[in-house]
Image (cartoon, rainbow, N blue to C red; front, top):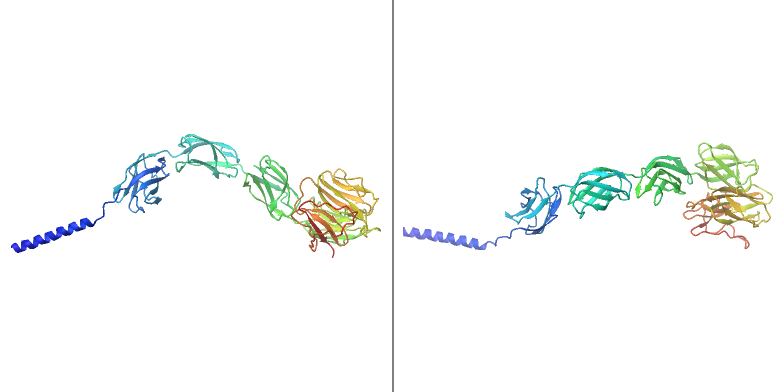
Length: 500
């Protein structure tokens, strides 16, 4: 019996010794989580709150966050020092507590506020730059991190109180809603219309470079300022601008596309706009006496003549037939050597040198000129041998548009916008005066001659003939006494071949 007791005691002793060893091997207890800050410390339900502190653990796992006893559920982000959560539905003012591994943190007071609420917006529509007054509640006594959404962009805040905000609509805003963002929460939304440019009609809905187009609509702005209008693929050249109407010329290099108005950085609706490329590719023959037929070949002439015309040597030709790609006309009795071109809907095509045979082979140089009001350009007449002819009677078809000096040869003076014909002896020159800047690619001047013409183009383009030949020298080196045509900065000398 005593032997048995000894064994039992020994086992108990062994068990006791083993329990003590296990207890001694355990690590010290972990520190409880600690909350040191809340950002923000007050906000409405649904707002985002960052909880800063320590001992939160590297991941959430089974840890929890409560707002006055209401669980915040799964956190949006969790690290050992920061937790990002959303104020849960049903939360009330009280302590925020973090629970990690069964240990609770200290409590940090959090105030649940009312969500921002917009009750009225005045005005409910407006263009960029308009001040808008937003009335409601829960905006906060000071703006701090608050923002205001007006249409489709943040507005610029002018003043802020808990019940009223005044903000300016952004210049590039579009229609949308008004909302207030404060304390990490958005208010209800109220519709807001931004008065952007709206096109109601475009007339005509097609044209060629240089066509005058009228755009009707609203919201264009009382002045152009930085506004632009596209007619086809490139910006048009604005002639007039008001809030409800814009008049512009189709750009020289435009292609079919849309009519669009840009105002305050916002595009209007787009309306289809087609480009009919009025272009003359050949004139056969390039020399003909009065009464003989001449064939114009090209594109964009129009299926019917309508208001279309042809010019042969500075005089309107007598049309025999007309189609979109070919026109046949007779040389008028009073025609003079100069240029040939087609005109449709008030727009003139490119020009081709044209000769009306005469005993002296007289021609004017330049034979074609584009000028801006106030510009001057020297003129001269030359014979078939290229020598200057003096003592001729020079005349302008409209001196109020383009006048001539008393010199021999004279200097052409651009007086007002328009189109005139200059005559001297048996030759003529075609002159167009522009009120403002000329479109890119406009031929500034061109000399006629046998099979070729020389000239200069405005920046951005070069005159192209049937062969498209281009060189940077005049076709005929001027004689020492010849007046050298001035070349504006950025222009290009060109030689254009029109021969067969």
